[in-house]
Every structure is written in structure tokens, then in C-alpha cells.
Image: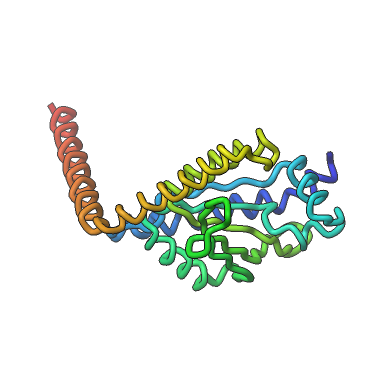
Length: 221
């Protein structure tokens, strides 16, 4: 166990640091009072049991998992609209604190199961007491509806060990298409949605400022 803790420590560090950095991108948009293509960011390090299972399935030697397994450290960036995914990908490509080494577009080219997401694998340098260590990190960018479907499919995959009954497989594929149609419909009214969200945000900020002034008057009295 101590070996695994030592091995996974830089992966945990990479996830923690990148969550802060990628959430900071959303904060910059909010500061500018413009639509943020990033809804929220999550991250995790793959559990040891999952690492061993995948290594066994893929025929990866334990000595090679650091270079052959790209998703030990993983982050997910959620977007409201499909168009936002491409904006986020461009942001990731332009960053100087890591290097994009691979991209997989499952939004345009969905998997047979119906899965859609955009995967970006980056080489991220972590600073440790022993020096710099480069960590592979997989960043998944998807809409909220894509994430809902993927979460359900992931749970069912564990239940059926990947061998879905035909009726479940067909239902999942239908649900994936329904989720994507929802994304398409929302894209058609994207400008109206963004305008409504901006109006709501401005109102909340005005109400908050007004509440603050009231509190100050009460405090003076």
C-alpha cells in the first residue's frame, strides 16, 4: 500500500492543481461578466482496484502503467452547450502549463454505445521534492446531458460487466440520441438562454448590493 501511495501522490497533486487552474478559467469569465463555457470542473485519481483491472484487461505491465495508462488522473469539464466544448478545447490547446499530446473527438464521432465526449490527454509537470515529474492527465469535456448519460451508462456497465442485455443496449442508444437532440435544441436558443442568465445574474448582484446597503444602515442605527 505504501508503494501505491507513493506512486499515486503526484497524480493526486496533478488533479488538485489542475482543478484550481481550470476552475480559475471560469472565474475569469465571471469577472468579465461574459458567458462562461465552463459550468463546473471535477477530478479524481483512479482507484487502485480500477487501475489493476484496466491493466489486466489491456495487457499493461504494472511497470508501464505510468506511460501506458492515460487516465489514472482524470478531470471533467462540464459545459452548457456543445459549442462551448470547442471553446474549452481551444483554451486547453493554448495553455503553457501543460502540453496536449492527444485528442479524441467522441462528440462528432460518437462511440457505438452512443457515448459522446471530447477527450484531451495532457502531459502535466508536477513539482516534487525529488524534482519535476511529468504526469499524463485525461481531461473530458462534455455537456451536462452527455455527462448524465455517461454516468448512468457507467453504473450499468458495472452491473452487467459490459455485457448489456439487448433491450438495455437499445434503450441506452436511444437515450444517448435523445440527450444529443436536447443539446441541439438548446443550441438553437443559446443566445436567448445566455441573455436570460445574464439578466438573472445582474439582478442577483443588484439585490445583493442593495441588501448590503440596508445592513449597513441598520448597523449604524
